[in-house]
Structures are given as structure tokens and as C-alpha cells.
Image (cartoon, rainbow, N blue to C red; front, side, top):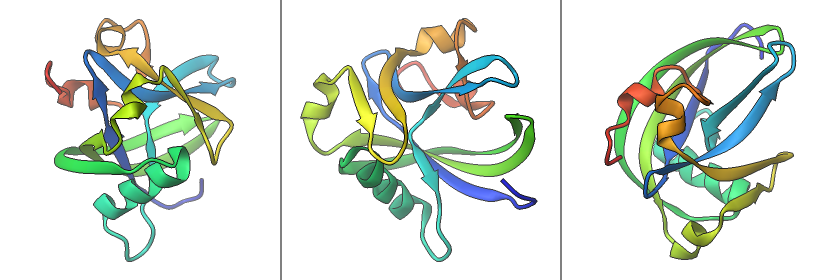
Length: 142
């Protein structure tokens, strides 16, 4: 994280009432949080193409990118440092339906695990979902 604004793209994948997210931890804030999968948009790359690339890198999975849910500006603090990102949020689906049967998925390019978390846990405040404002963009059927 530097003094730049980072464009990212995130895939909103649902399995029933659950959302596919990874769990992160900020020990400085003593906070556990969750975020949909995705990552940085590279120079000259469209956000939809970046999302497809990120899912191949993270889970070795192909996704079908659907409609854009929204765009969020996120200024945040992580491990005591300020970050600033613009997040493109897309509804997405796995091309291979077998991914929906997996309760957990090891993220290949990071020491993290993706899992399904019930959206109600985020709505009632029991768990933290980032980027801030995302939960307000999720309709009950999304």
C-alpha cells in the first residue's frame, strides 16, 4: 500500500443464502473480517477480465461474470496503514458447478481459505464484510 488509489474487482458469488468470501485478520485492530474474492486490475485490463484472471489465479476456477452490482470507494486502515481503493463489484457464477459443493477452497496464491458465509451474519453485524458498503448493495436474492 502506497500513496496511490488501487483499482480492484470483486466477484459476488452466492450459494443459496451464503456468500463466497475469504477470512482476513488485522491484528493491529484485533479484527477478523471477510471479503469477496478478486484482486487488482492491471494497467490496460478491464475489470471483468481482471475478475476472471483473479479467480483462475486464486482458485484455478473459471467464472462467468454477470451484471455489475456497483462501484465502491474504500478508504481503510489495515495493519496500521491507510489504503485507498476503488472496487468494481460483479455478480458472478462458477462455470464448473462442482465448486458450489465445496465448503472451503484453498486460495492458491495466498495463505488464505475461501468459504461460504451466510449473508445474515453480515447483515446482523455478527461478522464484518468489506469493502464497507457492500452489504447495502446486496439484495436478498443476490
